[in-house]
Image 1 (cartoon, rainbow, N blue to C red):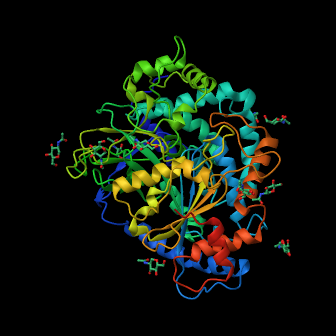
Image 2 (tube, helix red, strand yellow):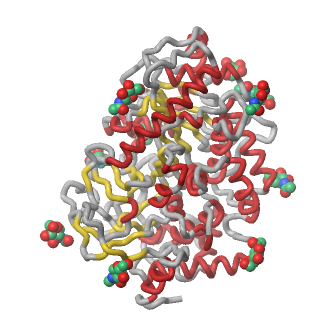
Image 3 (cartoon, protein in one colour):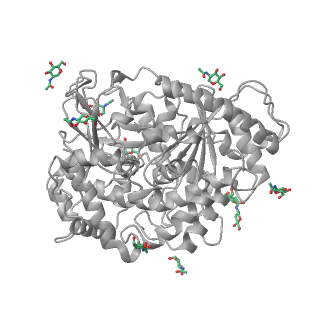
Length: 559
Ligand SMILES: *[C@@H]1O[C@H](CO)[C@@H](O)[C@H](O)[C@H]1NC(C)=O
Ligand SMILES: *[C@@H]1O[C@H](CO)[C@@H](O)[C@H](O)[C@H]1NC(C)=O
Ligand SMILES: *[C@@H]1O[C@H](CO)[C@@H](O)[C@H](O)[C@H]1NC(C)=O
Ligand SMILES: *[C@@H]1O[C@H](CO)[C@@H](O)[C@H](O)[C@H]1NC(C)=O
Ligand SMILES: *[C@@H]1O[C@H](CO)[C@@H](O)[C@H](O)[C@H]1NC(C)=O
Ligand SMILES: *[C@@H]1O[C@H](CO)[C@@H](O)[C@H](O)[C@H]1NC(C)=O
Ligand SMILES: *[C@@H]1O[C@H](CO)[C@@H](O)[C@H](O)[C@H]1NC(C)=O
Ligand SMILES: *[C@@H]1O[C@H](CO)[C@@H](O)[C@H](O)[C@H]1NC(C)=O
Ligand SMILES: *[C@@H]1O[C@H](CO)[C@@H](O)[C@H](O)[C@H]1NC(C)=O
Ligand SMILES: *[C@@H]1O[C@H](CO)[C@@H](O)[C@H](O)[C@H]1NC(C)=O
């Protein structure tokens, strides 16, 4: 289907009447600047952070005293952030269970109430599906989201709405054709995004009306009830020698207010609401700008786009087709998530290209999520200043499957980072700490000294610390404290599926979330809740309960 350009005017008119469209919209530019250098937080995030932190402190005091009345909760408390890792629907469901275990509205276990004490929540890939579903549904509880997820996940990503799949594919094709008619690329990443949106986001036309910037108008955001959300994706420089991001590749941050990266070779941010606008040297190239490009489904789809696999497959297989588009070789430890894709998954993706024929698929750039580059021709952003479009992939593709980098920025003043790791490193598809180690290496290389020392996974295995929570950075006030909570089989049904599994029956959805609740609360353990409190208060300089000494002996990593 091809629409004439004039169609976009009709779409704009329909949007003004409440029609949910995926296509970007042309609108007069604001008088304010659209690019700022990364010298600190935006005024908007700073205001949110401060207001949210004040609310979080009140909840944290309640929770700390519930777990152990020996905590000194006077004065200001540390800012606590949560990261939800990648790992497909496994990461979504295991991560959802951990959030449920922390959420005082949604569980009654030893850790319930800690969620209300968070200031920030970052996520990537499968974790970003979870975070987006929570925030787009106005900070909904996991148990209420499960009623939306269960039937959708049971149909499966590639069989949306079961018997109606053909009609759904036709609607998605229309969405992509309208985006193209508005002058933008529509790649397989857009089709992937629309399918994920259908499963996770509320509203008409498979959630097409959700944008990341519009989160700011939801009541839970206006009231500072939700931790400030951050979704990450990786940059790939298509003018370079590899289709895979290097281990020091730029990590893009998508937040309700801004998009950009702290990477010194870019070091710039732009308002999320105006993503899609063509800028040169920070100035709009025409009097009209673009809005609605920041479709939330496209953001979470970008964070999980990993079709840039350059490995050579057997003749006739989808691998070979990808290899033909993307011939360069990998240069980093970054292929872990790509390697996890099964042949069946790739075949399903290629079947989409038949079902959704308007998707363009002719060059290497079509393997990526395409975003017009807001930092084009910006001399202070030399890494990307020559690129009209940014090519983005899964936020975990550098090997860092936990989105920790946003919280190593001193401006966010995060003292405690709870890292819920649902990656699948072991043969049984549980994490072993490898990705946390990659983050430590990358942070060291980038000079991000807030990251505490993390050893390689073999050290954790040798100390019998690779399959249960570990605290990193104990006793060092110059770094954040990282509380690593790895997924583990704590219930009989366990908590794993392969990253590439895109269809999950209702029983399995429930059992994986239930296992996540057991992981978050360590089987509803009161001792664990106290120890988690000790980790949070460890660097605060305040008096700690006597029980903390045993906690640090058990959970702190010591070289
Ligand atoms: C600019 O935006 C206005 C308001 O949305 C719209 O009416 C107009 O058609 C746009 N102009 C172009 C050239 O797209
Ligand atoms: C940073 O957090 C500490 C508590 O951990 C607090 O004392 C300090 O005032 C905070 N600074 C800013 C700028 O928010
Ligand atoms: C939570 O559980 C405890 C004991 O297991 C019980 O005493 C308490 O009443 C429960 N609270 C709620 C809100 O259900
Ligand atoms: C299929 O579409 C029809 C019409 O929109 C709707 O009533 C029905 O519930 C859909 N079926 C499924 C399985 O979603
Ligand atoms: C990333 O590494 C490449 C070489 O591996 C180097 O040229 C580049 O400057 C590095 N980027 C940063 C931000 O350090
Ligand atoms: C880059 O920006 C400069 C300064 O605004 C402008 O003169 C020049 O035309 C721009 N170049 C391109 C290729 O857009
Ligand atoms: C790959 O990981 C190893 C540690 O496992 C590290 O020594 C090496 O520097 C990494 N290579 C790159 C390119 O990041
Ligand atoms: C490893 O740790 C677990 C729980 O932390 C404990 O039950 C087990 O005995 C330990 N195994 C060894 C060999 O130390
Ligand atoms: C949690 O309970 C399961 C049994 O349901 C047990 O196998 C496991 O060791 C327990 N783990 C912890 C950390 O208490
Ligand atoms: C759900 O999926 C699990 C794992 O594949 C399987 O063992 C179980 O039989 C399924 N249950 C139903 C009701 O289909």
